[in-house]
Amino acid sequence: MPHKDPGNYPLLTYLWVLALSMWGGIVNNIRKIKDGTLKRFSLAELIGDITISGFIGVMTFYLCEYAGFEELLTAFLVGIASHMGTKGLSVLEDLAAKKLGVAIDKDERKSK
Image 1 (cartoon, helix red, strand yellow):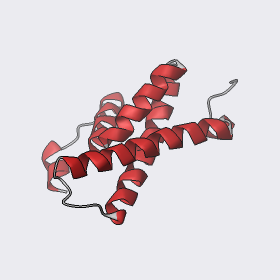
Image 2: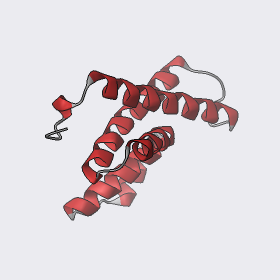
Image 3: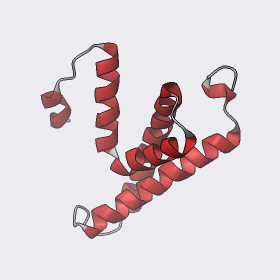
Image 4: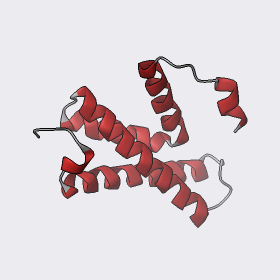
């Protein structure tokens, strides 16, 4: 790929990233039901998990591309980060803050 730009990736690349990310969201939702975090299935909760996981998966993909990771490692990290849900988002926030040299108020994050 000559220039790493979000618009230069093939549609197939985005499809696999989104499919793997959404799968991570579904697995996260099933885990929440199994461990009792959710009392029963909720379509709204499932859609929320899939949406959050899709976003996290794409951001993880971009981070892996920036770092020059191989495709299999990228796929693994996309799957794991998207399964982590909002925890994965917190990890990405921490990485971005460290890279940018800014502090994140952990107490403020917990109160939201």
